[in-house]
Length: 185
Image 1: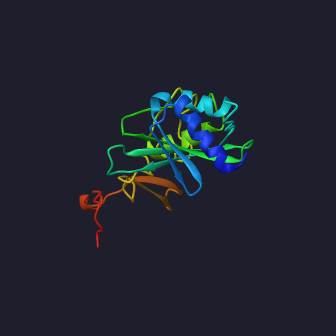
Image 2: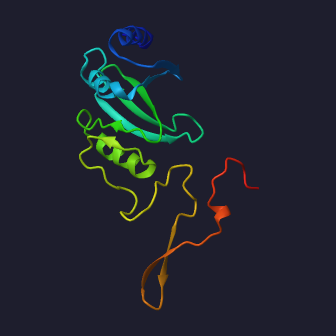
Image 3: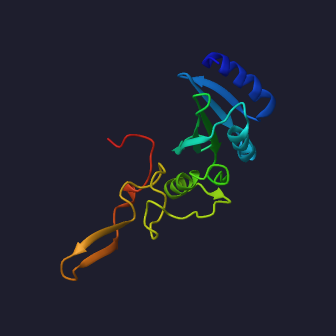
């Protein structure tokens, strides 16, 4: 089956089976925008339907779109080894929304969901082990959010007198902590 034939079949099958918001074709890749209500159902179909067979979850990424209505975009990359095709699935959510975990369908999503929660603060419902993975347990905030201050909130330094690492609150004037959308210079 040629790639263009597969794409036409793909779109016609999608319309009857998968509830989706939008379908795009960008740089020879299929991009599907989904609603979070049907996320688990759609991923189950993507993996187990004989006509799709997206059996490999390549990655999950988060994007902070700070000025938009839906602040965050979660992007899933799926690969069908049988049909040699890729599918990018996008999910747009606001700051207070939660996302259903797909760990029950793709076991390797565990690490990426924990990473997105740690760095962006997006909570995944029904995740078995949602805890910090890249930052320290005492870390405050989520460092990949665009409104996170560049300097952080605390300063770590080595104290020669006590011969240990000391954690001190960082003291800067308030003007450096405010996030603006303009260039400061």
